[in-house]
Length: 213
Image (cartoon, rainbow, N blue to C red; front, top):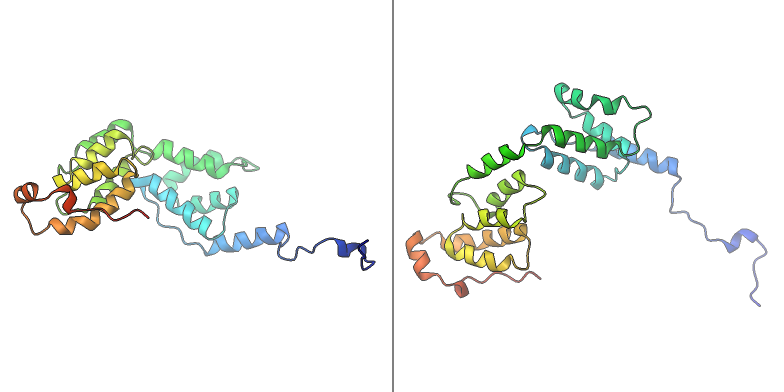
């Protein structure tokens, strides 16, 4: 039979690495104060909110009310008024930050007709852009649907033909963001050739994509 030291508390492990909840909360508040969020961006509210949320999470700030107040502090007065009703809830809702994000997106996001208009006015070819920059413009317009078949086609038809063929094949197993950055690495290989010569000379096998591993 195993012996014990006689101290009943010795049978339980000490959890010295877990600070009290009050201490964790205080630490979260300190981290929140140190985080510098980007300036409010009305042109792309979805990306701005995503950037802010990621910065807060990276700093260890995960409490809804803390993130809520940090975002409020970056809003210009006219947009603060749009969400004033959320601020006046006392106590704040448990999901106050999620409610704030939804409210801002619903009221400040592009209307479907405006998204379509901007999509139709994208340049017909890459021009001086990289494929990843074209992807970025598409993602701004359709952040939740950027991998939709129509958006993918909009991307592919603006690429040089050999790159477009490669990308179409890669899209069978990769997301559009991954393929766009893969295409960046191959675009300089084409810069010394005029478009007509390139189409005639470049074969798909001549420009292999790097392994995704």
